[in-house]
Image (cartoon, rainbow over all chains, first blue to last red; front, side):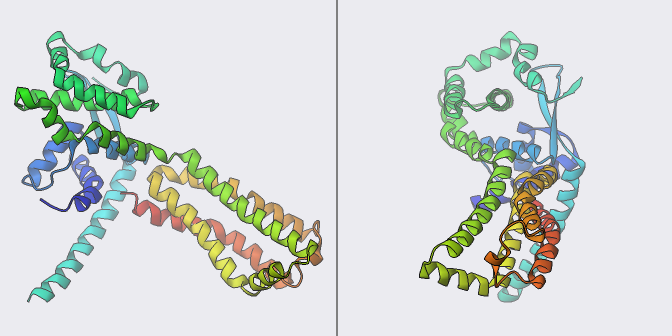
Length: 110
Length: 236
């Protein structure tokens, strides 16, 4: 488990990354995040929706309803062109940050 | 069949697709308790139906795909999703900043800066207060700092809009900029065409300062735009 603030700060980036791969609905996003992080990135699932709403407001994602053969229609989210652009910017920044931190912490440890 | 999220689609999601068996899931007392509490905590939010639809669908998926202890469904929902109070607070925070509020905040801030300047100028020229004279002298000696601080205000305008509204903020930035710049243009017009007592602004009003102010005004949009780009990076 990681620091809650750290997880909170990276939720939007993770959501954009997952939606960049395929359209997903809310519950699916939570499960996918949990699965890929080996249950290390546990967040309160209900906090995902304000984050999705914010990104929708910022025009990084958009939603659509999809009827299902069984069960209620699902609200799917997909990434927009602006969302892809900000994802590329932030991912590159994140990689640089991780590299710098690795260099600094690695040097201190050796 | 897929359709874009519209208000009506969100409102009708239950009517359109829920079968009797599925509705049974929501009749469970613990589930109802959680959803009712959330509904109550969210209050009169305009997009409430859509928010509740998101949580109902989430609870539906959770109950369909996972086996929860029948006696502890409410506790499990709180543990997994968060308490209704926590969730309602998050929504209140999320919806506190609206484009309209943000726009008027900066328009009024700029207006207040101008109003402060006007009152200071009138006070200095009409009254014989020593403290006001000292303040006036101090400010007129620090024009570079004032110009720098004022330029930063316009950078902040762009930054806050970019941070809160991301890609959508660009149109808002332009709109806010146009509304906010009005006092600057009016003041510049009054000064250049000498429609307000010129001598009131002596000794600060030199030809050099007028040129600097005109150039700086032209520079305000690029500063706001750069602020917006920086804020947009921080929006995710």
